[in-house]
Image (tube, rainbow, N blue to C red):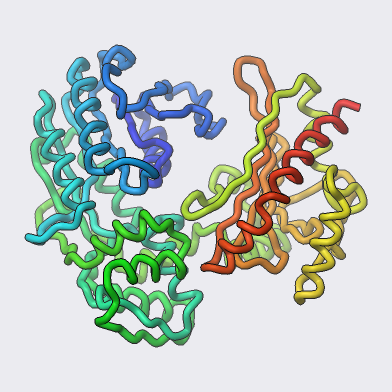
Length: 481
């Protein structure tokens, strides 16, 4: 079918896109900024890209008329400015007006479970979006989900942050609120299962996993899976503001998002029973199964150390390059993008030679100082160097980095920091081509751990600014010499 997919750079949209392609659909994908799109999808023969901002009016002319199905997966809760309720309603209205000029017969919307009488601002906004979508000349299928459990999801990362960091958790009383978590795999099954189902047209369905749990039970079950001994003490004196600060400092979430999450966490989110699972023959996972599934995909320490085991046993997955990505949630970034005229293969060779005796192409004395400081704090420092002067393979040690992905075909190198840090860090090099113009994209990503992590980034940020800029510039200079 010809399917319009919005929210394609979001958590659910990114995962839905390859599934729809595998099912043989033709996609029209929307993004506010096409520079954020992965190269492997940008030139895909079954995907047409449209750069559009639904917060701006009069976008109807950019859509092909022969669309059949459309997904509305736009969400503005963590927006940095403005009232997200107003922004979400504006985006929905513009989408509805634009899609009304096409032949779309079904719109599929993923909202939130809103069965409680006292809804949070976030859940109320999700409900208002659904009401606005119902005004269109198409059939609406609305799916309502609670918290989504999957590697990289906000809910999962918050649970992970709290349990991994705190042996004793002094928590707000909202941890006793009942919730109905659902695994991301089940969400995707429901989203694709309702396509063109006559019994799902102009209907809404709550979707949930197999378990109804309090947030406290979720934290403790996560701890049991990770074999961590954890104790939770709830305090009734924590106000919503204090709870928001607690989430902000303990986890990787922003304060703005923490405020909205706290307001929603106080509301019971339990799915009403309905015939959809039986109709689509979906048996949702339990919470434990969803967490375990998340850990098979997660891109942090536990995963990359197992990649090394796979390499040593010659069982490395050749399609791993299509699965790995750098987390976006709760991260700081330094991104350098420079266009160049040099042969891209020479640039690639220069990237592959970085580190070890070759150095890091800029401010090597500062890199060495960072290595010494790492050793003083009990880390590995720069003493590991590199095995080969010009070749890198997945799983290699590279100074105080670990090579997660070295793919010359896709022109991408991804490193994970193994130095002592109050958080996690990635360094990525990519060569991209658009309109016969090559560019080097160098991205340093840091996910802080609590207050110490934020302080570290704030302190080191000015140094990162000129070090990474100089490194990208000198890398291209060396390649052209």
